[in-house]
Image 1 (cartoon, rainbow, N blue to C red):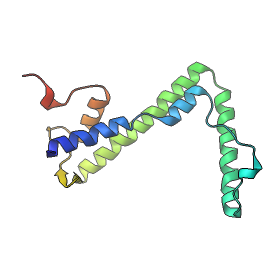
Image 2: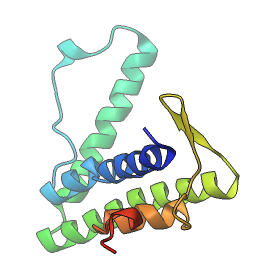
Image 3: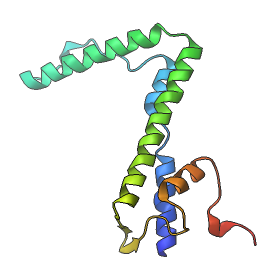
Length: 137
């Protein structure tokens, strides 16, 4: 594997992680099903308290989503997805601007071997663009 191949695989894997489960939940109007069964309640007090708090957060989120119409849920789902892709973009910018190098299976690779910043490459691939070295000349 060449350093450019390792870089392309890295960016393409990040593109693959851009799909948002949270956005799909918002679109469907149900954050998570609530299990009212007390038999599944953790035995330790601290875990039971966390479980109760988590359960009440789920109930609250479900109520908010139920109050929205489909158009509103789709718009919020877009916002959630943009936040996810924005976070990946910002992380790549941080790595690049801080001078990090990465490695995979013993192959070290620089961020941005095509003369563009990695966050640019990520957005381009997210939008379906081809890699620069795959263009016909």
